[in-house]
Every structure is written in C-alpha cells, then in structure tokens.
Image 1: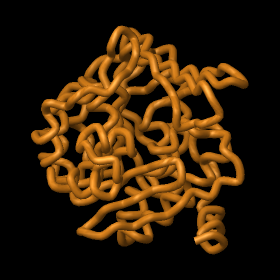
Image 2: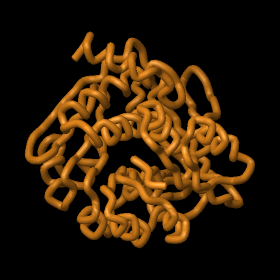
Image 3: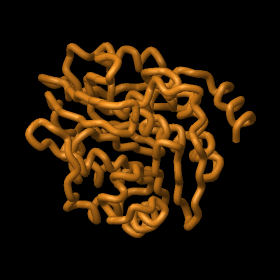
Length: 290
C-alpha cells in the first residue's frame, strides 16, 4: 500500500519530570505525528522499534487505522525529560535504554509520498537508511534533533554532525528549533540560520520556538504564532507541528500549511499526549485567531 506519510523512528518510553509531578508517558516522534495525520484523514504508516512489553502503543495506533511496521527489540528507548522550571523550553534529557538502529530491511516494504525521520539520538536512523528512503522517490522530511544528539554518559547532548552535508542534500523538509539551528550554523537569528540550512539542500525549513513556527520555503518566510489557552502538553510540540505541516502541504501552499500547523499545535499543547481534537476545531481556531 502506498501511504501519504510514513514515520520512521524508535518508540520512547518517557519519564516527564516537572516541579509539580513525575509521570510516565508513551513517546516517540512517530506517535505524535501519526495521530495528527490520522486525524486529518490521511493514510499513515509507522516504522518503529520497541520492546514487546510496550506493544500496546502499536495496538493503539492500529485502532486509529495506522499501519504499523514494528520490530520487537530486547528493550525500548527510555528517556527522562526534566523541566526544572515553569519555562517548558528549558529541559534536560537523559537516556536509560536504547532500542537500537534501523536496518534497510525494516524500511524496504513501505512506500509513501513523504517519509518523516524522527529519531531520538544519532545512529538510530543510519545514513544508508535515509539514502534508501530517498531512492523510493518520496519527499524526505527529517528532524535534526535525532542527528545532533548523542549519548554522553547517559545524558543527551548536542554534538557536531559530521555527516550533515551528506544527509541534508537528500532532505526536502528539515525541522529544527532555534537552539539546534544556532548550533549547526552559528547564527542566533533563526531566519538567517534557516537560509544557511536551506543552502545544504532542503527546500523547506521548519523552525519551531516557544511562540510559534517559522517556515522558509522557496526563498520566502512564513510565520504563525501559537495560541494555546494554557500549556499542559509541551512534550511532542515539534513533532505535532511538523506532522501537521507535512500533512497540509500535500494539498496546500507553505503559508496555509504554516498557519494550519500553528493552530493544530496550539490545541495539542492544551493537553498532554498526542493531538486528539477534531479538524473542525483547528478550522475554527484559524477563523478566530489567524
């Protein structure tokens, strides 16, 4: 079956620590993204790796009509995300388990119009797997966090990306945030950083930040703010925003997709977990605030 969007990335068993509470949640870029695409009525697939004990995630996605290609592993990737203050853009992440790297065989059966690679750590999706996805003739979307984050004594930290030029020339849509963009380019201005990143090959750059989303496409900038009534679901913000943008871009120009992504993400941030609202609510928020 040919899917609209296929997500590639390991499941993560997340422990979220805030000043108010500590809780365990199901994570992974694919999970946040696939919920969005399914809610938009598109055909979604997931290629992931996780321990058998966590396969309830697979069952949940399957019930939503999402096709899941899951590889059982001896352990799931386990992350601990600590938000020490009320500023939810400030966090530290440690890794306590790793489901390992994808193989060519795991992505071979899947065909899609767009592949989004959302990894947690460098090495999870090797360069040869990305090259194989590109050879399928699909658009390739990539979240840079899974390629500049490494395991340093149990903590996820940013590090130089030696294969940056090799990989980015295969990428059509690149997702980053301000911190990551500055690390890759040396630019604190996200617009200048986006231009530099586009020079490596990606046609569209998505930059999320605490106030909204910036897109650089075809030499033009598009911006839209977030309007959550309250923020109760910061985790998964970027994954949700990227999936919403990719889904809308299948049928709409960049500006429309940018506004759609910002509105949908605003609603997602009002509650924990993946996006579970209705498309009609996104449309209503756009009419009201955009």
